[in-house]
Amino acid sequence: METVLSGIRSTGHLHLGNYFGALRNYIKMQNEYNCFFFIADLHSLTTHPHPDDFHSGVRTILAEYLASGLDPEKSAIFVQSDIPEISELYVLLNMISYKGELERTASFKDKVRQNPDNVNAGLLTYPVLMAADILIHRANKVPVGKDQEQHLEIARVLARRFNSMYGSEVFPEPQAFNFGSDLIKVPGLDGSGKMGKSEGNGIYLFDDEKVIHKKVMKAVTDSGPTEPNSPMAESVQNLFTLLSIVSDTATVQQFKDAYNDCTIRYGDLKKQLATDICKHTLPIREKIESIYHDDVYLSKVIKRGTELARESARATMKEVRSAVGFRSFLVNVND
Ligand code: ADP
Ligand code: TRP
Image (cartoon, rainbow, N blue to C red):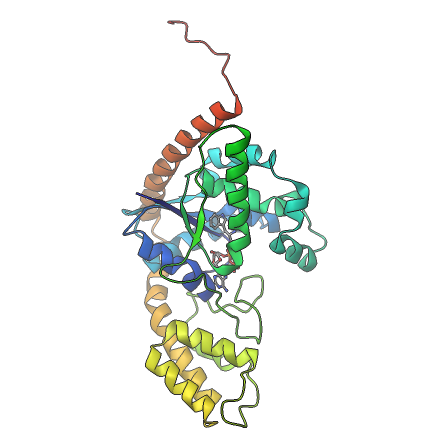
């Protein structure tokens, strides 16, 4: 059976981009594959969260994973920093990753632009740690949104480089995956770009009905079409993209027709969009709070997930260490 792995950083709450770009795929995949899903708390350290808030950040993503439908009986759910083998593989992969190729990564360039005062080495080697996350379980498929495509390419490059440098077949080449279609990008409602935590334009699974309506009603649009079939501004296209993710095809078509014959009222479109977003998110929201506070349940979930993840990680590291040439000086006195 093929192995699936994915993770989300432990910063803030999950938004619609995380849910529709990644998490919804996790939930479908757990019925068909050998699945590992984790919380990338080491990755979140690049932005230096305060130690007092760190654990609650991890707990939030864990509770939101479970409330969304991740089943701990089907998938191994774990926290990245509980698996020391990931950090060990990260060190080894750093030795075969080159500064130039990491500097060319689009996400690194974005972060440098956004935060010129915090260009730390962890940021530069972010894709190497991500490759370690994936390769430690020898994952074949990685459900992620479109923004992660380049990181997956780096994971493939490192898998190939390691295999060829050490004459081994330890690592398969992982592929980015979206159930049944291309990778998706959930747009923001502020006119352009993707929805994201760092972009500050998220609609969160944790938002209540009022907040969701308020955020959607504020979405940027233009002044409306003046001629039949006129081209759409990016902001309006984004509303339609979101509508096509959360609503049925007949509803989307009805608003497209209204746009094309210039009878559209953006207020109606937004109301429909907010209502349909709520249909997806409110049942999840209802469950988050009680799961968040259920220490016994969370401990059970993480215990099982960590055991499975460590077992898989240890098996990989045994082969990796042998391929690299590590040999122990400790001899068994009974031999
Ligand atoms: P953020 O971008 O908000 O910081 P993460 O980087 O932790 O969130 O992303 C976690 C997962 O969610 C990744 O698989 C990523 O591809 C996916 N994702 C995040 N934002 C979007 C989006 N707007 N559209 C599609 N997928 C997304
Ligand atoms: N880099 C991913 C993101 O920001 C999160 C992540 C870390 C991840 N390690 C991973 C995703 C391994 C998939 C597989 O979205």
